[in-house]
Amino acid sequence: MKKRLLAVMAVIPLAIVVAYAAGPAGNAALGTRSYDDFEPNEVCAECHTTIARQYEQAMMSQSFTHHWDEIEYFELALPHAEKVAKVAGVKAGCNGCHAPLAFLAGDIPPKRPAEGTRANEGVSCDLCHSIVGFEGDVPFNFNFIVEPGEVKQGVRTGTESPGHEIAANPFMMTSELCGTCHNEKDPWGLWVKATHLEWQKSPQAKAGIVCQDCHMPPAAGNSAPEAGGVDHPDVRQHLFHGAHDAGKLAGSVEVRIHSNADRTKAGEETVFTATVVNAKAAHSIPSGSAEERLLWLDVIAVDSAGREYHLPVDPKGFEGEAWTIASADALAYQDFGDIQDIENFKGLLRDAPVPAGDRIFRLPYLDPEGRMTVAQWNTAAFGPDYRLAPLEAVNETFSWTLPKHVAPGTVTVTATVWYSKLVASVAEFLGVPEEESAQIKVSDHSTSIEVAPIAG
Image (cartoon, rainbow, N blue to C red; front, top):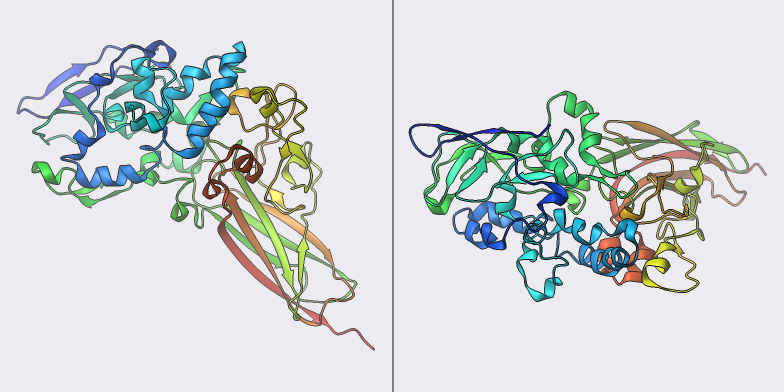
């Protein structure tokens, strides 16, 4: 079934109902358009100044030029696609979402960002506002249908523009619009990105909260102040803030920690329980590029003399759990050697920079040889999904036998949830700027116990 949406033209007194014929979508759309079919971003910015400034700060505008995206495509995906038939489709396919104008224009592979082509526009203004629907029953792998031209897809009736016509298209306010790129099925048929599918199962979805409500919240304003636009109480803010936004990350995962006793002494065991909650997101955390994200729980005790003690998590015993407990020396990402023709490549530290013994909330992506990978297109299987589902709480315990030299008095125990967008060893190996693998504090909480002096 192909989605056909009715769009109401609200630019003239008599509303015209237009039925869009389904055009090519997904891989079939490769090379079916021209760059000239789409207005450059700077043209849109002439009228939509505020929205343009917000969009320029978002990853939507940087989906092709962002340093890690450039490195991942040109240093990993592209060479892999040119040597292995199974993954050949990513040569063009990555661009379906990261450089959709280049994909639609058949400019494959695009030139690097330094060349300054229109691929650099990323998920451009006109690209999104030319989407009329999607092909099939599930949005994924850039199966959006575009109809570029004088009519721009929007959400509001009764407005006019001196630069183009406006179609009030209800599809623009659905999560399915986002799903066309935020769901991805790889060459093995696995959902290596499933943010929209995760949302479908969430309490937020059941309550009618869509992606745009969190990532494009409404605010009073004027969407086209330079073109005589009028004020509205609910202009959608083009923030698209997510994993690269410190404000969005802050508090997205909450943690609380308590002990099974308020007093103890050296040589005795005390058990601390940390409750970790996905308190904000309508999808799993981490989501999207989960293969390269790190989210972990670190617990540190500090005695009254200032000495620190790192507390490792208690194993739960489920299958594949070793992938979710940080190791100081476990290696992964050996497929880099296959992709880059590095002989006897032993791999990189799997969990850097997570301290050994910390709990990692992750979904391991496994290559055809069962090795952990960050190349989502090279994923043939998954390990256990130990991420945080929407509004889900999990308890992690830390059993600590207090050493004899612990100082009497108050011991403060702090649980901290940390996040990194990219495994540090991968970033270092590929020359990705350190900001991409920086450790970001998401939340923390402390408790205390009293340690009795040793009787003497």
